[in-house]
Image: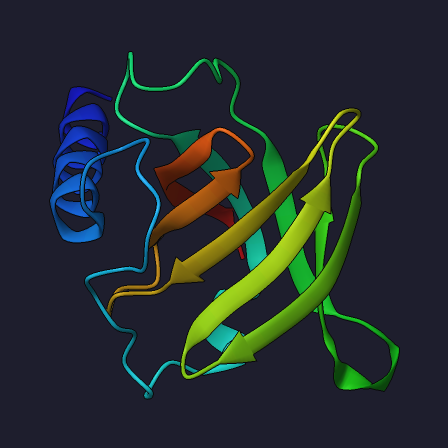
Length: 138
């Protein structure tokens, strides 16, 4: 458990450095490898927002990435009822938009060469925040 927390903290700090400061807007400073396949994204993931204290998000939603009818990639939130749309993978970057009760959140996630963690950003009307998704189930 301690080792997992240290790994998560290390990844959060690294993603904050690579993406720029938390809470800022702008484009990412890292680029996804084109070698990531959509199949590597499939499974259940737990979301971790920002560096503690840099965001008011205090919960960790769970998501399922699967194949919908026709083979299209589908992202669904498991922990609550919210709409997810505009799902795509472009140049190894997973993009989608989630509609919460009050706002839309735009996600960008990459799988940086390992299949247990994705790093990226979640953009809200207040700014862009580093996020990490940890794979919890295939």
